[in-house]
Length: 288
Image (tube, rainbow, N blue to C red; front, side, top):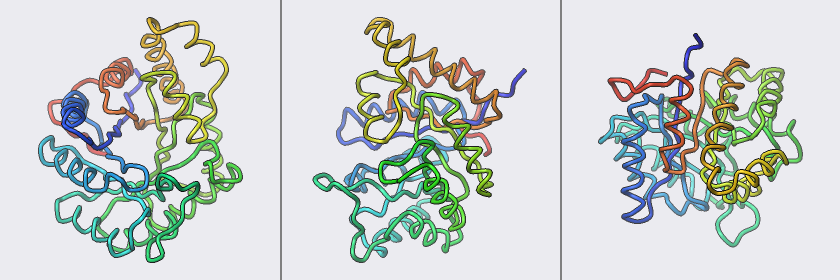
């Protein structure tokens, strides 16, 4: 019998009371599945900096979860950014997902703060210099919107690892071959840290396609046709089956960790995990 994969979940910070209830219900539903860690995102342009901090500390203190806080280079000085890291450390949070971040609203491209970090490599190196943080980074199995090609993305990931990153989570994708090609290219480039597939259970096909367009993820014609045929009534069942199939093919290809983008909606992610043989644990955490 195949050993179930280790798992992790991504949440986003709430902006209002209703979203707060949704986040806590999501955490309550998924924590018993024993994730290695959960991560909490930063809003575009750093707009949820304080909300992210509050959500991270609350998840760690109330649910006993190992929380990785997203941190970006956007609209902050080096001093301000490293103060956030120090505050996390003081609160007992010792994992960071270090990202360059998207451009603030109204700007077409990312522009570094004059006194800030120029890119994710500088951010990773500065956090690593502290010596007390586990640093995770993003990876792109299809070219990042600002990247010329996949080879450049592999080279950039190698530089982030050399700067101190200990693992990477990929952007979501629809075909397992997309991940395997990227993984093999990373191995060939001498990247030895875990490269964890990012899995996005489809919570709504129209929204997923918009998300894919923004981050450079290819939408296969077969998927578009399948969701069109399924219609609204059959969308949830199709999303479940496609997600389970993707995960099973990744596991068959040697993947032993999966990172789920939950969108603060636990049901589909929980059902996929159950189908993969992941069962609730007595404790909240599994050891990575």
